[in-house]
Length: 375
Ligand SMILES: Cc1ncc(C[n+]2csc(CCOP(=O)(O)OP(=O)(O)O)c2C)c(N)n1
Ligand SMILES: [Mg+2]
Image (cartoon, protein in one colour):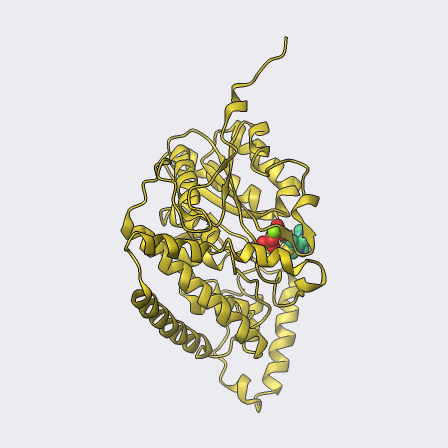
């Protein structure tokens, strides 16, 4: 006799706000107006930041930059469901998650200029630095979630990952561990349909990426990742379950990377423009604006004011970023080891000598002395 699992009746995908901005009120979402408007503001600011960052890179004023365009909802909303002391464990495409947690954009710019003074989060936050190696952070999030369980104060750890990263063994290890230990972990898969030039279809033959979670005994659901309501509903429920000791969740936000992988990529070489055009019509910001307007919560005047204020804020952040004094090259040796190995000590001494012989160099002359953390 076949065994029919009760899990087969589970919800596979949640959609609440259509691309036209029509909300399905039959699905309850406890998201007050004030918070909704805050999310809208953050998404607009992030989009403008993203546009400016690309321009700065093209002008030679910023290093390689990974675009968020199209992923504003899946970046901002999950992180906004956390408390400062919860752990945020993002990927390199993570400016939006940091921003939702209050990071100043000047530091994001500094980071993408290759300056580690850009790793500066609000003091009260438990934010981890970006994971550039894909997947390496997933088991770190599991460890942090374990720590939170041991502390017993209801803290959670949230990691973001991409569709490509969901194919890595790291996710298998992390979910095996988190589910069998019932850890307070939330994995947000930002399925933006591309892992550089590899399409989503090549990552898994599964209908959704979230369904993998059930095999581990974790909760999993796919949401429309351009739909603020669907993301908020499922992520806030996952956070609540985690706080109550009911184990880990995987929330797959199905969205789309509207731009290139980074400023170093040319997506026109491997994907069809018609696909991009189709996804532009599902834009997360546009649909939320349509909804807000339909509810009398937004209009052209408010939009114009928000754009103006956001651009002024951005100008101030860019100015602050470009006003940082140049970094001290010797800092590259700091904070890597508690006790540095002899090779690094020698290399640092060598660089110091080179710098000293070049004191005529205007840039180097103004450098502050190296910090004393190096033994
Ligand atoms: C361990 C490792 N292998 C390969 C890379 C090169 N790499 C950088 S991004 C990327 C694709 C990741 O795609 P996805 O997980 O979908 O995230 P997205 O960039 O779309 O946000 C790869 C393979 C890397 N950074 N780390
Ligand atoms: Mg991807």
